[in-house]
Length: 242
Length: 231
Image 1: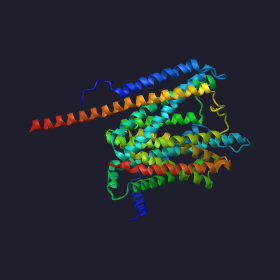
Image 2: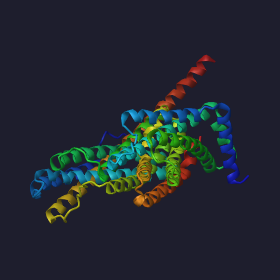
Image 3: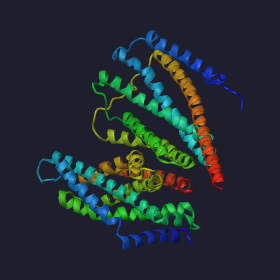
Image 4: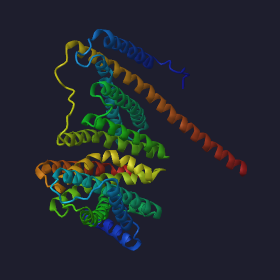
């Protein structure tokens, strides 16, 4: 193995620079380029980070889903490492989506939380993937943890549209004012800002995933080394007894 | 032996064990009953035959929620307990050693769980109706109970086996099962409310939805079960 220093690999650095640059452009557009919403005022600007983060979370959980299927089919630890990495990033983005959504909801709706379909299913999604990590940490055997996590990653992802549909029905059959976000089409400047921000966040996701994936690989390698050392020590101890 | 014969053998084994040890059903049933009674103190659920119709409807709605919470808690208790008992006795390993397809084992276990939870429901529902003066003796309710329990047990059978081989089995099962089975809970509570309040106009779409959930959850659980139990 050749000596490699910390973060000095080319791919990671290139992704970091690219993510940083697009993020700066997106931030500039959010702050100076796009006009404030006529009705919602300045608080509408959180939309340009809220939506891309939701997109990242969804993309990350999709990778967990694919990683889970591929792990169950191929049984190579790489797919599990990828799923693990994506699940953690997805959970972080889901938390941020819930927080930024609440921050926007307070001034606009006058409440931090409302039980509408999208919010409720995001919250359930958050709980499912929290369970994913709990499951992993409570299973001692690494291979079994990977299998169980793969199963949960698959069912959890399939469950998301089902939860959304059922909550939506539950609400629409329940007479209550439902806040509709779609409204009229966006002006071009808003759409541009959103698209740039989406691009920035997608590259950021790629960067985070790349680094996290390498960390998970290193973790497994470290666990293997510990295991090997323990084995060697046990053998040596047995030899000493004889 | 055909697949049905094998499923039947597994169910028969579980029923026989239960008849001899009596470790599952009594506990589940008492638990369901006590949950309903505790709910009575949390919300006033009794329907008085008064002209005040909206209040009666609201109470029937909380009644539907209460009975499903009771069934879900009792069901989860039973699911977790059934697998723990089998793991402790070592009979689950014996079952896995049988020359039987893993999917068949899943279906057999599911059928056993359905019988236990179904029995609890069949006895608890009339008691519930009598205690809170709710019109529970309707054939449509039986259908909703069946569909809801199937969806819940399909996921529960899979997750209980998973949870049983973790270090925190009692905590793990609800953490996995509650969020994922939420669609089934929403569907059954809505449908039960409609039946109890005699507003069955929107019932058919909900029944269809429940049926669709059952098919989806059952298929996935059946497909992935052999990946869960391989040791």
